[in-house]
Length: 315
Length: 282
Image 1 (cartoon, rainbow over the protein chains, first blue to last red):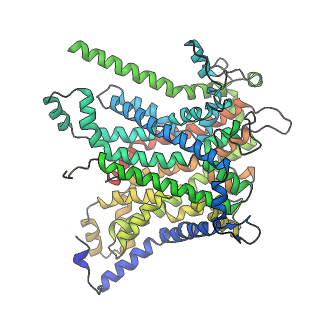
Image 2 (tube, rainbow over the protein chains, first blue to last red):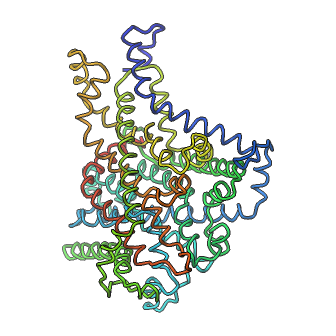
Image 3 (cartoon, rainbow over the protein chains, first blue to last red):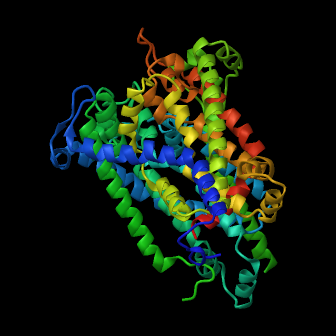
């Protein structure tokens, strides 16, 4: 039923009642939306234009916080680290998830078991995965012992500024199961006839993947991509837990590891807001992060018009 | 041809088994450290496969006052947040799925778009609000926001309710049931599997919750276990290194219940993500 057909100026009594009930029933969400989203977002813009430590009255500064932010070397370090992490982690985790899902989609015996094994790491709290990977990637830890067996001298990971971010990426890849499960479910939903048609046309495995699986799966890939980017740019817990370990260099400062090499934007923001109470400055940082996320999301969405395929759409 | 297919199968399994082993290494290592003796911990020498089996570590930790308190806190926070989320989301989802009103589609799109807003732009003013209310260092800032629903769960439940036949509502209306009556007597019993799925997601998220407990709670006795594990890794006042066997024993206590929840809730979760996931991107 289209809404237009019902567009009359006057509502009947029953319709009025239904409308009233509708707003009554969604009122918990509506209240939360205004109190915990709309007002905070507005307030956050205002704070970002002030100098405020939570105790005195805010002092209006205009764009000063933003100017200060873009002149701050530590902010660029955090920006660089966050982008480095996101730009490598998101594609790598996507490729591995797709590959594993594709392998499991070929009527493999024990599919359920494999699926469970790949998914279970996502149930581990990130605090715990940070701690265990700190040991796995210890300079003389099991990873380097294994590499030594292959004759490779492993790096000291979290104690070497060039290897901290790859270490974080490896740690996060352990939790790729949630995206993988979605992709596998999506692959299993692709109609079998398409593959049969492909078989008759004599497609090989790569062509089948490239011309049947990928297009049919593209909406789900897009969804995963967007969510992964949003989450990756907000990375906090893993570097925070690592950076506050006793043995980690830079613990007394921002907790971003050696030379702040794994300091992320949200970690810096947390420090400014809840350690130093620079609420205005931290709010400005939050808005810069918001704009970055927004632009990247829009870019991915825009580009997706070229590579996603929706059933029932003519092209 | 048949030989090639056989090799193909062997290769597939080889890759899958190898990957599975890699995915299991952190668990094995965690168990190994959790079973280590205190003296091995001091030397910081751990092996991937356990060589010592101090199962009493698990027994002892349950009598550790801090850890048992944190575990209790986790259970209480998780249960209250989950109950609040499930109840509020079901109600809101029902309204979005069934009631016709001007502005419904507008508010639904608004609701969905809140999923994309990174929490950082709301976090500081929210903190200020809860501070003004005097809620800092209590569980209220963690629990109360759940009463207002959560966009993703509202969306999943709405999709589920929208697929139920409308005749049910109409028949109930003829029987004299009001909107709330239809929700409570007709819809609610039918969406139990979907509610179970939402509950499982919420339990997992709340159990592992880190950031908000970190900023809102100061008193260690109020911490959930996920935050407590981090406290266990702090150096003691006497300067002794953290007892890593204890850290990973506590970690296992954190992980095992979620694995159980996963096995119980698996079938519900899988279906609902699939239906919401594929519809969500279209």
